[in-house]
Picture: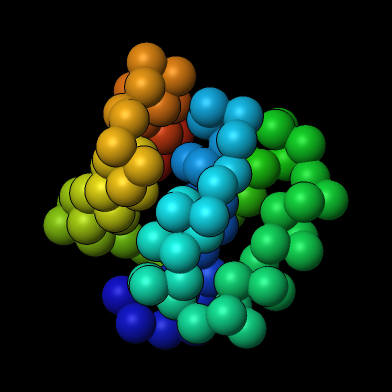
Length: 108
């Protein structure tokens, strides 16, 4: 998982996850930037901010189809989301519920 599309998908997925509890703080931003470069982050964030929830879910499905990710890749992606959720010291119920939904979306 090292192509530009993979990095964009990881960025998108982490941005989607940050909005689970309706706040996007500096710790979460720093966590994302520890995984991807700022240029990728800014590019993906511009697209993300223009979309509604349905469009965002469709975009995740699009990345999943385009990337043809293995079960190991999906496990890595979901692990990155959980790390993000825990980065602010509070893995909230909203974040936990979003993780359940993301796993369903990513299964196809």
